Length: 329
Image 1 (cartoon, rainbow, N blue to C red):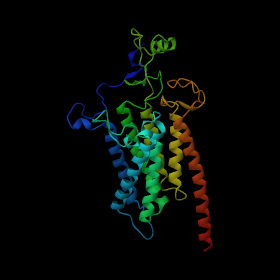
Image 2 (image 1 turned 45 degrees about the vertical axis):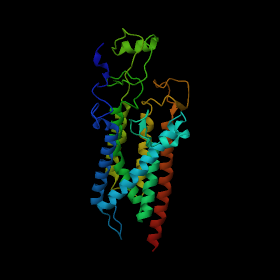
Image 3 (image 1 turned 180 degrees about the horizontal axis):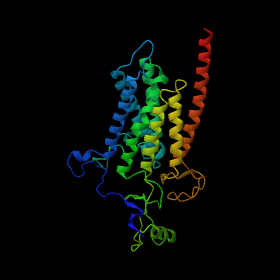
């Protein structure tokens, strides 16, 4: 068998951008990708500003408005992402007992680790709430601004998942696909187990040391980066000038993300301490043994799709009645 039937995770990639360098060693790829993501979203919002996407009959938007808008939204997004991650996905109970650690970026005394653990769904809720509050404070058309943000989010999201890949985290399930990646921190298996040994031989992996084998996995972070980021952004960018009513782009984004993420979750390994929410809860998390084994992420994504459909119907009805009333006038 050829060694090219899988890919070893590059040994030169570290969580730190400058590993071992004083001060600069504190800069991590994950945090840097967040900055790139926010800058990308800001750039897309500025593009929409030039198209007049934020203008209303009585008020014209400025770049200062865009900066204030995205800064306020990001603050709420980060709060929501961190709180949701520590209180929903963490099962140790540590953050419930010591909530002040939620935003404490150090571990084991003074070792800087950053805020490890951010939940997309929590960030979505927090960011959405932040946008609503900002629009109320500044007396702006809420759905007009949320629609513009919905178009910009996937472009930035692309880099967030690349950050996860560079961190070597949120990897996928075991695969014999030639692009499968052996992540150094992934769960390993005893080579004495027959199916593990057979799988390793199938992909040409050395089984001379059968104590533990680290099998290749789907690079699900890159799947998400491409489909939930680039592809979804392309679709929304195409639709932005064709939306039938205010709020349509928001519903399209929520449903599109939920749908794509739901499918990709079948390739991504669920959190070991949570497992499956539905289906055979004793089934292996590293193998996709049944489509009925549903993870926490899939439950939340299904809820997003239902919410998008319900919200879309409500906004469609409101818009139709509004147009009928205007026609009568």
